Image 1 (cartoon, helix red, strand yellow):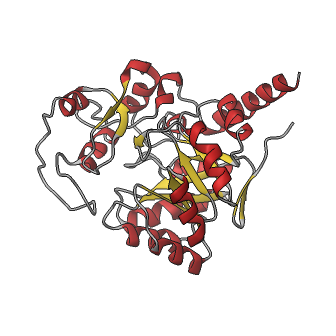
Image 2: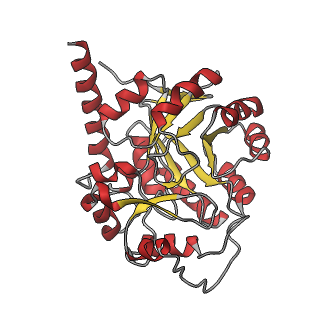
Length: 320
């Protein structure tokens, strides 16, 4: 029994698995290329990078694989346009855009022959995305890590959004095993996006201390915290999130106006960069609710083989 493929516009991946674009500097060229080479869709996180840095990461990934490579860029970042054009200029296959909605990106991608895949949390935004020319949409449920655009679970949202559009719908949030993938596909999803599971892989650019927080996390450690972006964010609890919960916001030492709109309670880019640099007590460690079910740090190759085997076992069990 073979896993279904995933077709997004003119691009087809051998496996229906998209690796989430986790910022800042977690999902970089080495992770994306490893996932693409293993048959999935590899995403590079553009948010928090300069256009030149993102172009370099895409170039690195492109040199390592002929698989499907994309970027994930938050609409909320102030250099969104420059990042999208940098990625397009390096021949990226698709652009995933979340944390806001941009009408302009549809035109940029259409002119370049690049697929555009918005992250949506409602039927209204899914329909709007299709009308503007989206090749697919990603339905990100409340279980997801990072910034959350809905308070509904993915499997509750999924059927309604599938019914509302005629393009592929990809499920995201809370997926960590092949059995989870089967549940999403059985619910009608064309594929899945997995972030947290790929953050804890050998090729991830997260430091060891970051990955070990995933491995050691319990359900009680996964919390929702305040973000100056204006959306709640799911993370692993640490001294920083304790401070944020108490309203004790760290002072902003230097503002570079990285976001189009920022509440300025604290500098989220600084805290995400700190975590990626290894400071997992003073930095912000974003993670999905599934992080408590992650217990090892495999290579991408081994993880992808495991996911396929788990999906196959779940599928054959259902047929028995």
